[in-house]
Length: 294
Image (cartoon, helix red, strand yellow):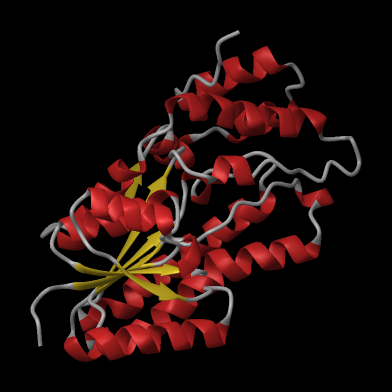
């Protein structure tokens, strides 16, 4: 059996997943990049070719049990094992809790949480048997801080944090590591895909506006996804592993403050109607400037 490490990266058609697939291949791993449709993987393959590396495509939909089982069966048949799994596939979800349809919660959870579990279940038996392997779960700074007006997304990322913490304990006796990577704002197609809000009551105009202001500021300073990919690679190969890695614009600052934010300050941030006052208060609490030019 080849000693070349075998890595699977889900959600590899864009953003962090695509960059991670290419980066791990650069680092000498045999990489299987999962995509829902191989016919739409032109950018991934072009990026890999430009980097002088090869990634192998595996079609699967993390939201579907049978698709995941079939996809990983093909990967295991081709490679014999999976040493490292990066659960990068994910979707956004904008809504305040009052306005969020139950089907949106279910859909976001099915991809962001259950999808990661589905994929992990396919590789863990082999990792346990070999007493080696790494599961890297990509959560978000919104997995530590309840990002405004993104209730389904926040709930899913908090849930994945909890699943990941539990997995880290469960797998420790088998020498299988779990790492949680918490990006802030990273350059990705998710910006273009994540612009809808229900706003069915009209009562939360300021909440949605303030949420989009954060991302407007983040978009101007968004971190290159390869920076996240390098952190993911480090989390796999380091001899001094940590459970959590915060990265990208606003990520480390906000994640570090979660347990130190005064309850009254948190509630006050939600009460502010005026955008300028909101941006000033946000910077005072988090140390992150979300003003934009003009």
